[in-house]
Length: 413
Image (cartoon, rainbow, N blue to C red; front, side):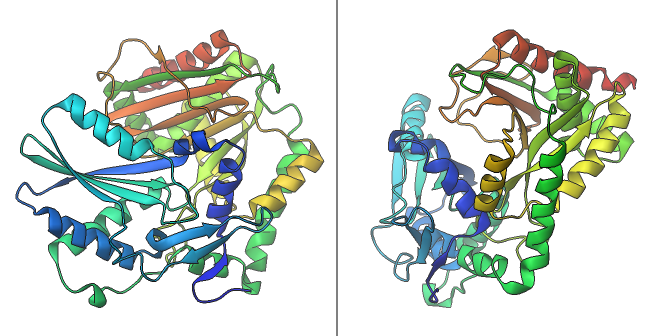
């Protein structure tokens, strides 16, 4: 049952919640995502506040709270007064130094959201030495990274075209998406996704990251960013008519093969699930992990072409009921140990470009068992984070080393 403003979670929301609910509340901040947008130097703070209130009218996900009382069936509620209420958390700060700005932005971005009492987002209007920026932090159940450009477009439109809040029309939101996903006419789509998982479960034996300790507790995180590697990845993507994400995935899986000796590998990768024009610009979490069965070779260019085709086919099966798949996974005894995600990266403070060596970093508390490569373009560079749990440090370092070597050698292919 649902009403106009109360109903089930979308697949992307429930996928995020199943991750969040396993962790203590003091770690919930690790599910936060954020955006950083420059603002006109002469913009008035009240004008920005008004645009943010209008943004909440436009995007129902920014007016959503969650009823989590039933673990089996969490629900969402679209509030009707959240857009104009004075309790929206919109903070303005003037900072005289970079250190002060880093402290203020860190608090806004990293403070966890409750999810139940108020919409799970907050904004910071930061003035620093004559420059004005907007930091928009929200929980991953509100939106994924792919919606960042949508949010920014909507915000700048509302900032540049001020008007009465009553004139702002609400777009489709996560509840609309959930009801569409669960509609009877979507049954063929749901069945095709489940069939894809069944095929993976039937052939996944021996296709994981060998030697992973399921009970391992040590977490590792290896990081690097490079402009040179991005240029070479782009060149290979152009020559193979693929994409930078597929080229990096190909190098990563080939590196895992070289380190572990496996020839067939199941890697779970994020699908944006924004193929349907109706939902391409919805402000909601839509990305979900989808398994890709990869057969590795020593030829990176050919491997990139095959990986790209396999990934594109798998991504079209990326919208599914995670609770159904989790039950299937448990019954099959399947435990994923290799993951990949490519996205647009933002950081408050970063290491120098073209760092000569990857460095070990403080890992997230939410590192899963196995090996996961997070990569993305950032300010003209390619940024890598290789996270691992239950995997020996020298093997993690070797995977990163081989991934970079393959991409650096790709110009000779």
